Amino acid sequence: MSIDLDYDQQHLWHPYTSSVNPLPCYPVTAAEGCEIVLENGERLVDGMASWWACIHGYSVKELDAAAHQQLSNMSHVMFGGLTHQPAVELAKKLVDLTPHNLQQVFISDSGSVAVEVALKMALQYWHAKGEKRAKFATVRNGYHGDTFGAMSVCDPNGGMHQLYQGFLPEHLFCNAPQTRFEQSWDPQDIKPMQQMLEQHHQSIAAVIIEPVVQGAGGMRIYHPEYLKQLRQLCDKYQLLFIADEIATGFGRTGKLFACEHAEIEPDILCLGKGLTGGYMSLAATLTSKSIAGTICSGEAGVFMHGPTFMGNPLACSVANASIDLLIASDWQTKVLSIEQSLKAQLEACLALDAVADVRVLGAIGVVETKKAVNLADIQAKFVELGVWIRPFGKLVYIMPPYTISDKQLQKLTSAIYTVLSTH
Image 1 (cartoon, rainbow, N blue to C red):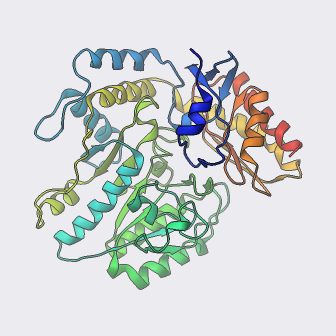
Image 2 (image 1 turned 180 degrees about the horizontal axis):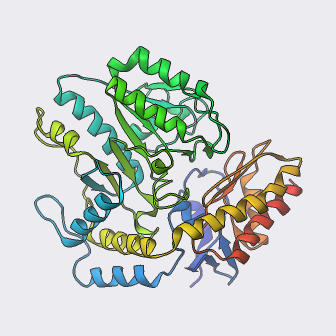
């Protein structure tokens, strides 16, 4: 039975897509390895890892087995008053892998919710200390999710959520770091944040930031020293430091977690996307025993959050298998190889008239164009060339699975050069 694309266009509302004039959708019937299989049998090399989550690719036997085994026991049970081994095992793995101070694990069902949880933790922390701090500090060009709390700490000017201004809480923003990852550190880079915290620290609950790589807000890659300086400022003013590693966690930047580039420990850490290898929606927010204890010594006596699918056993089981698979693999060598190939192969794009910049870190390759691309047009050209790449705005980027072959990666980068050379 073929996929009913007419019904899809009439009734399914796809992300960031008009219901009146919807973008074209390509019907998928299967996915395996690093390829998406269309209904007509055409195979597309996936440069997006399904929005950065399928770090092992598709149809991974170890993850399939974990899902099947857990299904034979139970797919879900409420986490209020009950627990199960997959959640306990996942907590153990996350506590062992993340910075030492992070000992308390809150498991939720999506990245945006993980950020909401982090923000609520910070608010409840100060409330328990007798201070109603309502502000968060962050940098421009950031992106933390599509739910209301997460949207409020995304860049409100020209960002993805600009039209919600006036409805969202207004927080504190300063210029984003400008020193690139590979450049010499410029001490002036931290000054805007330093001035903002010095002036407003008594009203700030926490600073939230995407470590090293700003994702959907602009795919900007900045110097790790900024994080070191920011950690010192948070310590100086006794502010909580929230690291949003939903996009960067689990090896994407060449370190298991991007904070490792700066050798810092956040007070609260948000994880998602690659947590289950892209099989199921799952996220986690980690914090210290001290912060958790302070929250639970407050008026409420508990942390006031509880998603229905919190600690879902099926998702936790797949996450455990995904983490085991990642750690057992030579992922550092694979990501480094991808990084070297991306640097070598995308550099040629700098000579194209349409291209403004190229930047690479780990398994992230970004080509920034001088003008916003026509998504429907450019995506169709990529499909014709046998690749799946979904740009946004001026950004044509790839975040492939770590298991991608040299030949498949070459196909992606060649397609980018070919399409942009005629753009």
